[in-house]
Length: 311
Length: 311
Image (tube, rainbow over all chains, first blue to last red; front, side, top):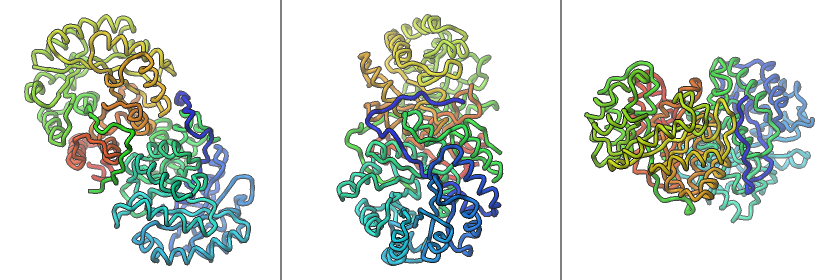
């Protein structure tokens, strides 16, 4: 298989953790319900391809997201407490109950940096979202469970337009102060560019929030995701969210390309000599297999180049 | 229209020249012949959108590329000696004759950094390609015509695999020493990553070749083009090749995405506060219009996000 020439840049980190979101974020907006067998095989293939952190599902109400009604069944097929880190999303207290009952050792909450998206996505204002999440985070931490917080709309918002660095840092601090271990800083609409990434990471650092507690979650809507990854690597970020085959994205921008494809990220990291533990060939095969299940080609450039449309 | 928030990076150049290759590189591999009226309108729309350098056609033999049989007719409709820089490709002495007769003030030759691609594309070895181009360049320069040299396969070759930095710099030097004003350093297969770009530009600088004489020509085959642009901007490069709507690419890798889309580049530059003179909205409209003429959606992420499939 074609691979890029390895030319390390000594100023960048030597190792990166890819936080794989395909099974949850990637599949949650699929209209046709996908069999739990297929989901379990997807996760197993991703793990076999070397991914060490795979967010597998969300314990959201089936009324909201019918695709995720099988969360407990899927969790029961997987080893949530095993050597591979398998976080699950929990929207609220009830979700945390179900996650704990399924043996989850790592959960994630999903917050907004803007009032408008908090209202659109959670039907709550900014302050109310913190009030909702705080007891969930406190209880999870007390149970010895690691908590990640997603923070969305950090680089712009479809209703509010530009979002200030200060607003994002303030929202991030609230979530970290609750006891969350990691903040996933999300460019939900994909509008951010490399200088914006640098400036936002500088703003977090100036607020004494360690870069080691940040992950970056880029979308490829405007083709900027990998340029943004390089900017974040230069600031020392070592955790990046990505979705196998580029599955999923923002449900509020249907025509747009969504999540950064894990394959495109792995290509970059391989070329930079940065270890991610991922076998690109096995990952591309997995995404081509999933594309065939969904009957739709992968938007990943690397999957397209190496496996054709996959459909 | 959505635009990214402007967050300049003071370490980067303030202005960039986009060398638009859509009308020539983008259209040359279209199998259905495109009417000269459509080509002329395409160029005029690109100029109206603010592009200041547009490579309009190639004076190649119609036997090789039937799509370009109308080169003289197209050139006659445009103002090759006017205020907008309108270079044309010339493969050989005969092509230069035709270009000069058409009033061209700027021509480009297309060379290879590898023996294999020189043989595949030019049916000549590396030394023979220099022997072919030298009199063309000498005669053009004597006629007061600016000459650009494309150097392809600088980041890998489908037959030879990895291509060393030294080989690329040596080939580039040969072309510049002939009297060419600019060298367009091409990642023809799109395999290069950001560290490789930095290392190659360092190698050119170490060989006393000024960065001001280099342009970068990236392909988005593996999604790396914009990350590579950022790496090149950091080294001070200020000329980038791009193709409106991402048209075209390498004829030897048919399934792959080809040229970096001008729109995706303009999005990045806008976000970085770097002036390119381009009106993104007018450019997206032009690419959507061209996609409708070709009956095929644009592969550009920005065109897709802002104009849908365009077909």
